[in-house]
Length: 310
Image 1 (tube, rainbow, N blue to C red):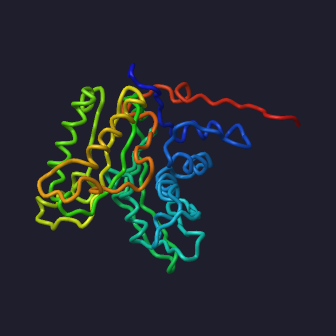
Image 2: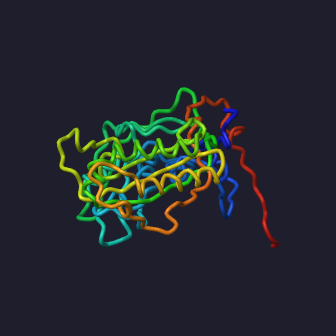
């Protein structure tokens, strides 16, 4: 917590309702649940929080729940226990399948939507077509929280980042990529002893060959790709050191000797000049927790300000 550069709490509908009751022209809010922004008005007007929050969970992503999905405005019309959904783009259709599938979006559990004040139980949810472009949904049940909670998020600075972008279509480079990366690491460390240490993180990711760690091609018996992309990243205490590290890595990656090499240069290609790009400060999550809250009004105070004359 002490290392966090900034800590925020994710507010729910409570703060928005308190703000809206002041009848402002504009509400400016900090970190908040996406759902809360849209659920606050119907809940304030007395609608059941279950259907209201379920509808809000869908329309906060606009027409992403449609086929084909998009970023056009979405109209949600609440009718007590159910609501209707329609994209404002006539080329998009909200179907029972596309809307139901949206329950998987950003959710660990497609049958529950958790908010600070409670959760929405979707086990009895139903989705019915109104016509080819509209859907009616219902069945959501609101479960008030025994004690309200707030998701608390914080990030700590971990250094300055620079990256190197390069690619290769040389089958010998692709075949020898692991040995090349290991050799370049050693050569960089000889010149910059801090490179690769905990204080100066140096990472090589070879896209096209399992860089994400999800699909290791060789382990799955897949053929080698015809082209690979090298993303070399350095996170160091200073921007100068980060860029110097990837610059040294570039030179040795470009000219690294390996068995079967045909050319002393030109084994990799650069999409940009210079190929070393500064990326600014790098952060990582240090706080990602749920905290029980005794007083939401104190945690998220509301202030009314008058700007200008009149």
